[in-house]
Image (tube, rainbow, N blue to C red):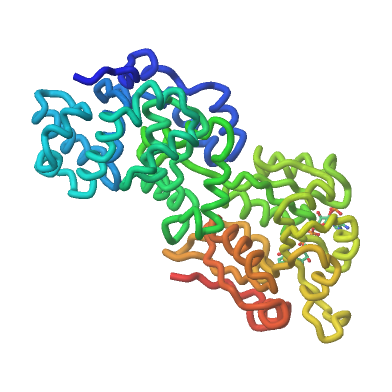
Length: 422
Ligand SMILES: NC(=O)c1ccc[n+]([C@@H]2O[C@H](COP(=O)([O-])OP(=O)(O)OC[C@H]3O[C@@H](n4cnc5c(N)ncnc54)[C@H](OP(=O)(O)O)[C@@H]3O)[C@@H](O)[C@H]2O)c1
């Protein structure tokens, strides 16, 4: 029987409630995560590990390798077959090597996983890896040492850091169940990919914070309960009908909001209390400091509202309408807005629907409400489309500010059109 320096079934640790500091940190990071955490006050992050036998480093890695791309149930079946072969326990490295390649295969491991296990066993057998050495290494060193073995990638190495060594600040970003959880909670129409998908990258990056283990474990224990979040606030300048509707949209997308008006934060007490605790009243400067800033003021107030805006490449959503359009000189109104903030990226969105419709639940009649986005910067447009999609809308890209923006303007074809994409 292998030695068990990491007693993963330790009763005390398995029964421990989540660290209160970590819970609070994550509660404050995001309203959706706060709801998940609040719904599970008795959550014990390590309880599921208590259901496993005591495992040493090689045993934990055997569990991890067997479990790559498989459900926990399928993994347990394979491991119990492996245990049966070795007299009721998982093999030590020497036992696995002595048994030959057919044994893992007969237990249900793929040829590739069997080869990975043997390559790993060789490293433990010849002393390149050991429990003691691994427990002394940094996370990066462990990842480097383990991923040298063909078939062990970051997911397996990171899982080892969490399950065997209880190291904090480890994120299983490629974990399939975690990605499914992010997809469901963010209402993505595809599985997020950290490298390719900007929205998922932001969501997962938010977990790149101290104590990010907790949500991973929430997911594992709660079967996709976990949420990762973009806790970037959305700034809104203008707290009237449209500003409040946009605040509701941002909240639906799981984003906190800083909202401002011309009369200062003190005038917004009742607005903020109606919208809820993820919304705070701020000055226009504070709202303008957000990465996404929504302009929701009357058209004649736009220059004034934008005047103080510090321009540092933020995304400005122009949700305004120029009703008279006699000041445009052949340009679209959003091009004019873009001219007022040359250091920001303007996207026109949110102006074609009435505030009551815009602020209402966008999933309706079996479909999703269509929202139009136009802009000259593809990344900015994609960030705005993501915000609306996360809120449940079907975002539709109309092109640049000159052509798409024109179609969205008052008196043009898409103004006031309330469409549902089935
Ligand atoms: N209402 C709709 O259904 C709708 C739909 C689509 C688009 N829009 C567009 O959205 C914009 C806002 O319309 P609304 O109906 O929401 O107007 P609203 O109800 O009158 O609200 C206007 C808001 O803008 C604030 N504001 C005015 N000047 C400001 C300044 N210089 N700096 C900061 N904040 C300022 C006001 O603050 P104070 O109250 O403190 O002055 C107020 O909170 C308009 O361009 C409109 O065309 C509206």
